[in-house]
Image (spheres, rainbow, N blue to C red):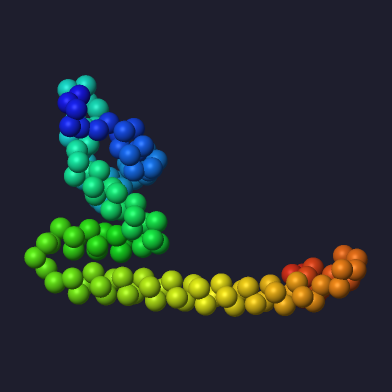
Length: 135
């Protein structure tokens, strides 16, 4: 294989992405299928590396597969206004804010349960009582 191409294992290591995930991204159209070597091995180029790195970073930041698909489509249109990209990022930020609010509410509820603990026996445990189904 030519040195300017990467095998799937090399691409996997370079991006810290499982081989199965790379194949999945190919199947769903996020990552274009690579060419093949004379031995019929996948031969990934620098464009694949850059695109997969973009996908990984986007996924690490919590963007959904559909949002990543939209961002990739926009990234391929270099002359286009970035308003659509901004809108996707703002929508995702709003989702993150909602999740943070939910987690903070959950934290308060757990704090209340822990603070009610009187360190007695399990039979009198307020945490167990709060987690038990109403019967």
